Length: 174
Length: 254
Image 1: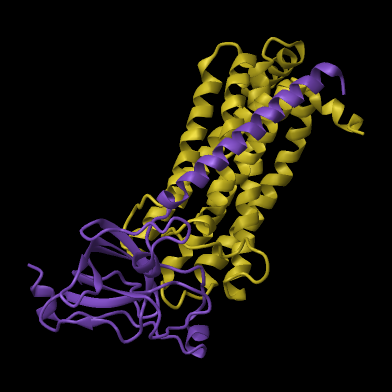
Image 2: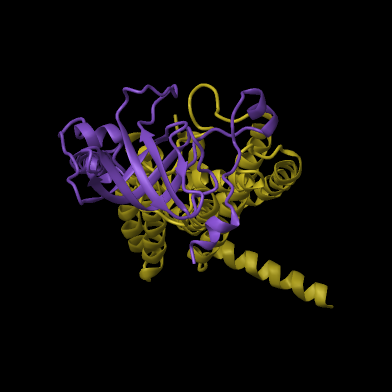
C-alpha cells in the first residue's frame, strides 16, 4: 500500500476506533437510563450495579411476568389487579420470588395472559400493609420471540385464551 | 492479490457488468419473492396467539435486517472511498442510501402496525425502536449530503463521514434487545442454535428473506448504473451510449 493510502487508513481507522470507544462509554454510563422498565426485584432491592431504587410516588414502568392465579378481575367493572415477577428462563414461579402487584382499570391488551410478559406504566405506591404496588395507567403486552402454530401450542399444553369481558364490565367504562 | 478487482474501478466496465447482472437478479427476485410471499401469506400456519397478524413478520424482519445490512454495505463503500479515493464507491453509496431509507421506513411502519394490536401501542421509546428511528435519520442525512454539493467528490466525502460515524448505531440496534430491557422481543431467527419458530413457519421466511435481499440487490444495481451515467455524463463512452440509444429510438419510430 502506498504511504498516502496508509496514512489515510490509519486516520480513518483511528477516528472510527475513537468514536467506538466514546459511544461505548456513553452507553455504559447511560445503560440504566436506557432500560425501558424496572423489574420487580429491582423495585424491591434496587438495580444490580448502582442499587438505584425508585421512590414512592415516582412514575415508572415495570416489566415482568404475570404470576399465574394472581389475576383478580372485578365482575362489575374493568378494575383488575395482578402480580408480576421477574422474567427469567426457564419460566418458574416461586412464592419467595420478589413480586409487585399492579392495579389497573381498563381493557388489557389481547396478549395479556398469565405467565406472559407485560410492561405497565404507572406510579409506585405503598399500601397500608407496607407492600409496594403500582397504580398503572397503561398496560402493554410484551410478546416473546417464540412463534408456533396452534397445534404445537396445544401439544405443549399452553393456555392461550383471550380474556373476555361481560357487557356490564364494558359499560362501566362510559 | 486485489488485481482482479482493478478493471471494475473503471465506470464503463462496472456499468456493463451490472447491466449483465440485472436480468439474473430480477429473475431470481421474482422467483423467490413469489414463492416466499405466497407460502407465507397463504400456507404457513397461523400463530397460536397472534393468529394471522403474525404474518407481518415476513415483511418486517427482512426489512429490518436489510435496513442494517444496506447500511453496513454503505459504510464499507464510504470506507473504501475514503482510504483508496475510489470514486465508484461514492456512486454505490449514493445508490444504496435511498433503498436503505425505504427499508428502514418499512420496518418502522410494519412494526407499528403490529405493535398496536399486539403490544397495545403504536410506538414506545425503547432502545430497539429508538435506535432504528435514528437509523432512518442517518439515512436521510446521508441522502441530503449526497445531494447538497455540486461537486460529487465533496458530497461523497461529507456523506461518507456521516455514514462512518453512524455505523456505531448498527451494533446498538442489533444488540439493544439483549443489552437493555425493551418492549421489543429478542431475535427469533438470527441467533445461534435453534430459531424460536416452528419449521413450517421458518421455511417461507427464508424464501421471503432471500427474495427481499435479491430485490435490494436488483434495485441497487439499477440505481448504481444511473449514478454512473449521471456522474460520467461528459465522458465519450456515455455520449456514444446516448447517441446509440437515440438512434435506436428514431429507428423504432420510423
